[in-house]
Length: 275
Image (tube, rainbow, N blue to C red):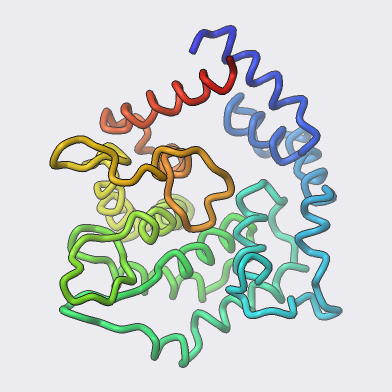
């Protein structure tokens, strides 16, 4: 892309009616300081936006939601993950009842009993615990239960560095879908908590994607799945190069040369959409 095209795209994003898009552009693209008064004011606009109002519209008088936390896409698990991703301002105690719903579910005895170890590998949809870690840290509502979820994630990590909920005994490779959110969560935890253990776990997880250049087979360089090369948002728990590159940037792996193929593909896609 040319510099002119890049500036045109940025100008379009800055004119968006959606404050979360303006916030992401100014904070993540233009590099404005998160603590600046202008960015803080913009995050307040995110809090009061129609999108957030709709997301929180089903809260009960006690602040909780009338659904199982994992109900797609209206349970507390998904609402908190979305708020964290779009720039909702941190330290809002009104979110604590929803946070507790997610904690109570993930740390319950029934949830624990459903976790199986088969052929020496824990079969776990680790995006669930990881979304909780990421959202509670980002939203400033984490407590010691987030630390426990991180401990479990690291304990469940597969030999190749990722996670998978596939219960077939012959499954030995980690899942892209179930490993990208743990990478995001653990790298954030490592940065905020200065945790060497979490950083090592994040580096191992990153290698799953980097050694495959984020979306290619190691054997012949073809796309692992056509959906991996598609651009979509929000990802929820589905992997694609846009999500992958975003997490690589957050985790400070974006400068690894092995991210270049996905970056080039993204540039081509954006250019074709802009023409």
